[in-house]
Amino acid sequence: MVNRQWRLLASPVGPVKESDFEWREEPAPEPGENQLLVRNIYLSLDPAMRGWMRDVPSYLPPVRLGDVMRGTTLGVVEQSRHPDFTAGDLVRGVLGWQEYALSDGSGLSRESRHPAIPLTAYMAVFGHIGLTAYVGVLDIGKPQAGETLVVTAAAGAVGSLAGQIGKIHGCRVVGIAGSDEKCRWLTAELGFDAAINYRTENVLESLRRHCPNGIDIDFENVGGGMLDAILTLINKHARIVLCGLISQYNATAPVPGPYNFTNVLVRRSRIEGFIVVDHWGRAPAAMADLGRWLAEGRLRYRVDVVEGLENTPRALDRLFDGSNQGKLVVKIGEEPAL
Ligand code: NDP
Image 1 (cartoon, protein in one colour):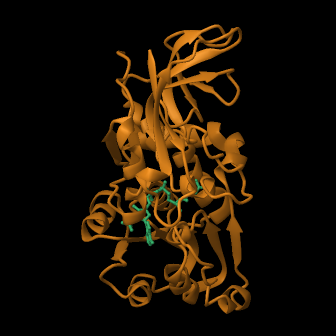
Image 2: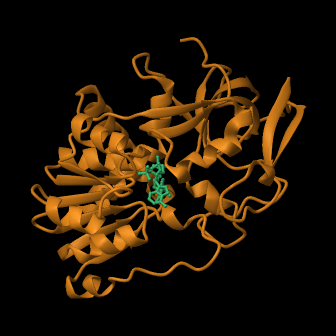
């Protein structure tokens, strides 16, 4: 068996390029005692990957040059010499941009496969994406019925779930996204109260129109000018849920901070950053609620599947140019038969 993989060759400057990675083909490893071999099926592409390639201290150590690029995968156990796993198990782990991965079981979770749930939903909803939206909105945003929630990158994987969770909890939800098609999807199919195309509209003016009672919660995925427009309209005791700052991940020079910071003070607001890896304890509750809302038809999602591991570096850029339609995943190999 040949293991095809992408290794990080250089720390990218600006947007990621294929030449920042090296394509390798080597024999698939053999599991030793207490080890197992996983065949990866889907790889999650996440904006955070851009940060992991930067040689600066963060919540995870940077990926070292020459190492297989880090990434969360859903896969199937191919061979096992580990007491807790057997061949055929569906598993999730951080097994990287590669076809086969050796594991000692640490950080690996066994997933029970539900015949009515497509495997892609395990990446788009039941995993770190769903948990991020759930914890961000409910534990940090603490929504009250009737409050106004604004979501940036609202048509993306996390944002689209965050807005729908806000609706389920009785909020008025306004999304900001980068195309008319995305905005239509948010209002016509996901039930957002309004959506703003930041590429064609004046965001501040549109927010004023769509948030007549001000903004109580901001689920922030983007930062920059969009965050400033939102800060202009926050209410007293607003919560700014700092989930991501994608507009600055490719920056090559220091970025300016929020201009409208005074409002955080005078409106007695709270800005709280969070990282999903600290919140796995909430996963059982989150997955149960997300599953129920999905079954009740109250939650929808889109998955954007890129075929072939070889296309991974180019596909990652789609998160930054906005061409992904929902949760971006790479299909590395065939799904096992049910
Ligand atoms: P998405 O599916 O939302 O894809 C990223 C989207 O961001 C793009 O589709 C694009 O949508 C938008 N975008 C990219 N660049 C810009 C820009 N310069 N200005 C405005 N919008 C931009 O990705 P995810 O759902 O995976 O991630 C969304 C956010 O959540 C990211 O900031 C990510 O870092 C964060 N995140 C945080 C986690 C945590 O633990 N705190 C965990 C997971 C994700 P558009 O067409 O609308 O421009």
